[in-house]
Length: 210
Image (cartoon, rainbow, N blue to C red; front, side, top):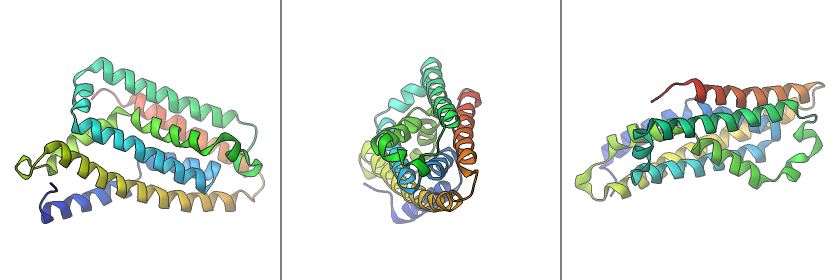
């Protein structure tokens, strides 16, 4: 069901380069890792991966195409995702304490962080548009089920992206923990984390229509 070896090699090379290029998902992971620690960053990466799986199956079964065909549906999802990210950013900025230093990460719960990562990805219609533009270039109807090829290619893309984001989370979390020993870092990391979330939300909202 997969493409031939040369096509698959090209797909994996393009996938790796795309996943290594800093984008909204990577910035989100960095902000969470520096603001909440390595564990939260890795969980965020897996939450984003879960969201990517949703986009993969949506593209495979044509749901993404349906979203792209409706300007109203596209805008509802776009503005909903933007508002959610901005809300998270403002909440991080107005927080009085550093989650790293006070141990509030465990109270907040990794499950909630996972769901936040998944939601920010699912509510970004630009990801759906990307999958509709990227994956079909490597799908060959002559090699079998198009749906299955979409799912397999999307899973490979997601595995690469989650691996890259997890490594970024470990590195960013380590840097955040080291910097956290410096006086005044708690306020800086809150503003950094919150500003990244707000900027990502604004980026989605102001990016314009399809």
